[in-house]
Amino acid sequence: MDIYPDDTSRIPLGANPSVNLNLPQPVFVPGTARIVGDTAVAGTIDNARFMAAREQAYNRHDLVSIGLHQKWTPERWTVSGDVNWSSAHSYFPSLAQSTVRSRAAFYAPFRYDASAGYEKLPSIAETKRWTDPANYMIFPFQIAYKNSKDEDFNTTFEVARDFDGLLNRITAGGQYHFRERDYMRQDITLNGLNGRPLTSLGTDAYGQPYTGFLSPVGGDAPRDWLVPNSDAFLKAFLTPGVAATAPNVNDLGASFRVGLRIYTGYLRGDFGTGPLTGNVGVRYVHTDQQSSGTINIGTAAAPRAQAVSYPLAFDDVLPSLNLRGELSHNLVARFGASRVMTRPNVIDNAPRITLANDSPTGTGGNPQLKPFLATQFDTSLEWYFSRHGQLAGAVFYKAMDDYITAQSQTIFVPGRNDASGAPLPITLSTQVNGGSAKVYGAEFSYSQVFSFLPHPLDGLGVQATYTRVEVASDYRTGGLEVRDQLPGLSKNSANAVLFYDKGPFSGRVSYVWRDKYLNAANTSVLAPVYTAAFGSLDGSVSYRLTPNVMLTLEGTNLADASAYNYADNEYRFAEIANYGRIVMLGVRAKF
Image: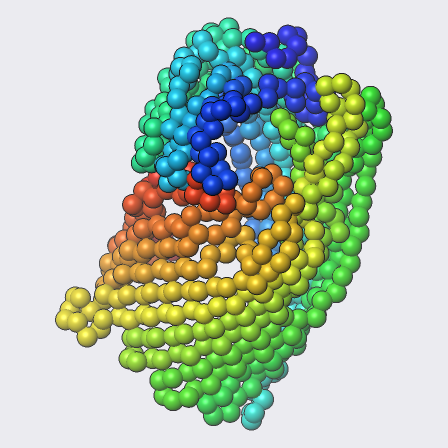
């Protein structure tokens, strides 16, 4: 089953996409489908690819952070200054110690039945043994090398003056913030041994089968999988010549440098008389952004790199108002209104294109992408029914402008050709401004320490919160129209905490739950993907040995819950993730 040429050449990612994209295509066998509504919940697919893969990475992270703070308080004045600098370096020591993907595959008919819904693994009939290495052929071996350097410098100077009367204080300040990311990426795909039997690398190329796959989840799916051995793949593929290969034009196109210089000035006045207090202020922000990278130009036969740089400058004025009123000795009302800014991720501002390996798709940055702004209001009422108890309710509203959404377009990249040698259309997904959405809802909370209980139970307490959120939106992301939804936002969420804190001992058990939410709506899927409702039981205990030394024990997802994803409806199985239980034992010390 030689899908690729049997040679020892290095074929870089994107240099000859006809090699990487000319794969056997899956075909739904006519007459085998069982349809429920508009979904094929069962059937047979020919030319299905079964992949045994291992991905391992040797990420190294170096972080240095330095901070200085000074404060002076002459009479009614307060003068303060802060200087902070940090540097983060995330990288791989070498190509052999980077992200390596060792893969083997075979093609066979695939019979499945997903009629049980998304909460069970689909039933899959085995036509070839999944764990038999003799069935597998070597698949392209991939190496992804990354080197990312981040620098962050932030300095603030603030002056405040106290007054008598209605105006309590005036505060004025300025801030300078510099942030830069220098990111280099190199992707290598090696095809020289492609199509050869996995067993041709020897028994060291695979280990004992992985067993117990998603054991907490029901369904009649395979639970044992063959696992490649990355050391054997590295020995066979990564020759000294490959290790010395310089980044190609596509690697340069995925690398970038983005720098931000942010100048901020602000003025705030604090006021109050009797039961009413508050503050009003305004913040002015000027941003200079420089995004640099490399684009791929030239002909299909001779692509070449060209450096590009995109400057961008913009100004924003962000006012705010906060009020607090004591309606009685145990009843407090609050109101807030503000204009706020949310900046995009640095990688979304980068002039970069990263091409997929097995499909004519890619992702890219947008150096013209700006932060999105929002006008928000919230008001709350808090009732302190005892010294250690509180009931509160709040309503909130947020209107977002220039919301960042996904957009897709067709591009042609020099050197990316189809099997006939013609330019290959690439579907590129990137981020753009232009969406709008409104978010509103209510939140209710209750907290109390049962101080009225006899010792030692008087350290017991509870906390509980419930939030209801509604969304009014109408925007496009990729090729999909999204109405009244935002990614990652659940309509209902709640948490409950039982805690104890008395003397040297403290502990808490919490349950955090959220309703289903939109997980992804972009060009990489045919339908929006949802994450089903999920709850996690967590806990922690600690004991203070001395005033400066504490022992801690923390547990996450103690009930071993799984997260379920589906597309559009419960029959369109997408993904099941089981992260298992995480238990951490630690010691905390103060010096």
